[in-house]
Image 1 (spheres, chains in turn yellow, purple, red, cyan):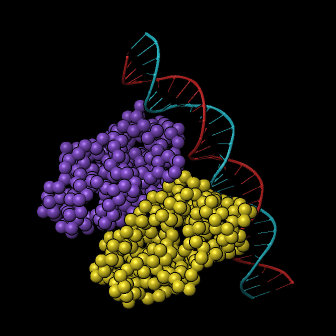
Image 2: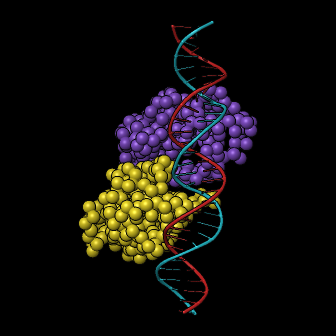
Length: 229
Length: 229
DNA sequence: TGGCTTGAGTGCCGCAGCGCACAGAGCTTT
DNA sequence: AAAGCTCTGTGCGCTGCGGCACTCAAGCCA
């Protein structure tokens, strides 16, 4: 499970396409760097580019009036940004922020819409993906409401681990607090507990996953549920 | 705003179609009664019928392991049940329970899929609707997390009021607690406070909306945000 | 070397909401 | 009329978390 193939990273969505349509799509794509903190989509703003993360990953966040943000979804090479174009909607439903630096393929909305017309497999994949995203939204909404900080943090670290393709990544408690929609010190306490148990270690924003299996035990069942897609 | 036309209730989604396609769709529909408590869709189960509520309304709920349910959306004559068929997915993402008795039009999934093929306007409307649902999901997830019981209850009553086309409906505190994902007694306290302020009155599950404008003030901004669609 | 910035530990107070439990009140049934 | 159920009011102790604030340590810059 934690055997990695860091050299060959690809987009699962694209890889699933028949080779002709895949090549066609790749033709319109350009590689870009995803840089931590970059905002790829802004909520209710037009989508300029569609992104297929390869090694980087992106989080979808909502903001509510004066509150801190709240993460609704995490997108790595298993997914994409801009799937709502398959609904004929050129707007992003949420803000999308790069959460782990890395690389992605991107394509302009214009071109992508054309690809959608000419590639039925692509459209099918997107629709399926949209459905998955919808179920994930409701699942994680319930999780956010009912579960406590520590299991949620564990789940979140696991999801990040899956998408980071590495055992360590840079994330401050402050940042984690925003993702989980809780106080920074709440994260500190939960993280300290997990560090004490040898599940993770961290220092100045550098987090190391030490015991993945242990983390899975510490996480709420939502992790497993969301894995199932 | 609170002027009602109780005699002529229709489905806004259907009404928006060009007359030819509308008639075609209505042809395949049959009227059914929505009876409080009926489960129209079960999560992850095949969709047999698509529903267009007219006077009744339906709530979408998720359940998490051993927890109480949690409502993720409310559907009245502004929406429909089974929109995921437009994604080519014949499964329901969440459980759908009739929350206000009334009437609806329904059509079999089979027939509906055919309609989708022959009516581009229908498909367009559904896609748009799916997008709206997605944004609502994230909005209400954040609301559930950050806002307190009383404003959430107020919002919820307003949404119900909009869909019930009546100033009173039958809902026990217990039921409301499940929708909001909180304790029953928490609802009792919030409801008592709102009754004391003359916003509502209730007795043994019969709730009356007395001061709609006041309720709107008591509700969180999420109500207005969700109104905007 | 010293000061600044950023990340993290920790503590205190307050509160919303939980779990639980019991009591009273209104409607229904026999 | 009595018994029973359902719906609501209410109280008590607990806890997870918010708000806030102060401290310390590690890296960065001059």
